[in-house]
Length: 141
Image 1 (tube, one colour):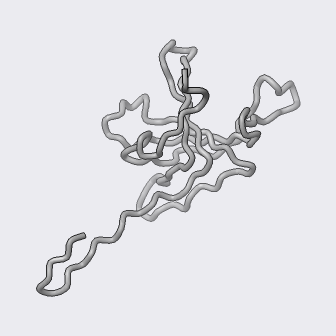
Image 2 (cartoon, rainbow, N blue to C red; image 1 turned 120 degrees about the horizontal axis):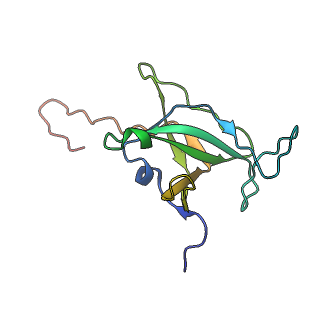
């Protein structure tokens, strides 16, 4: 099979309606390497980068309530910075770059699940401002 490892994917394929941060950025612990009193943090097998995670809420209105919140793991040598909050919004909108997904079978349900990873997070790109028509002229945007 030609597919080996994580599958590259765009942010808009994973979150076509966008997503919002609903948790703190936390460093992922390597439970296998850690022992009592000694915490070891996870590193990506392929890149050696530290692994961080943040909970996000999918803004897709058709997603079931129990599936709205997912964890995105971010590979970075330093803790990623959460974008600034926007006035009037209860949650911080965010987009991710360098996204990949990896399929696995969830142990608790026996169903197919996806591990979502990224290399960076940032504020969402804003849409271009609408073009204003000058008096008496039609302007195509």
